[in-house]
Amino acid sequence: MLSSRIVSVDVFVDDFAAESVAVAVSVVLVLDWTVGLTLAQQLAIGVALGVLVPLAFFRYARSLWLVMNYLVAMAEQRRER
Image 1 (cartoon, one colour):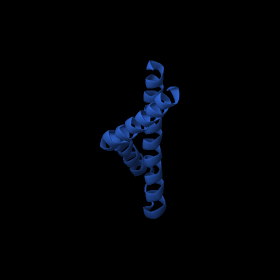
Image 2 (tube, one colour; image 1 turned 30 degrees about the vertical axis):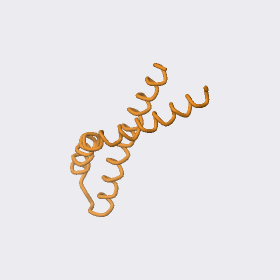
Image 3 (cartoon, helix red, strand yellow; image 1 turned 90 degrees about the vertical axis):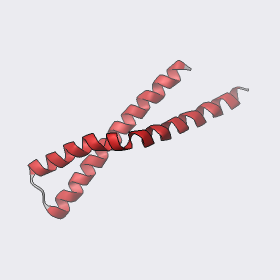
Image 4 (cartoon, helix red, strand yellow; image 1 turned 90 degrees about the horizontal axis):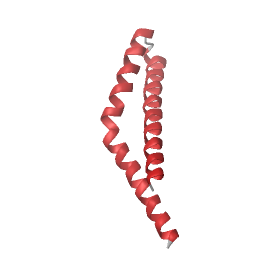
């Protein structure tokens, strides 16, 4: 049981980091294509989003992963019975 919790936490951290980077990169690229930002502006926006997105959405993403972990664990318990 402990190993499944460790794996779920690891998956949560990896997925959340990947999603944060994807949001930051996509927003910077869209702004670059539409507005034409300089490299310094792109880096400033990208770093700011890379820090703010995880802080703003941590609670909601964690809740989603906890619900999914609970549903999977309940399904495994039902299968074992």
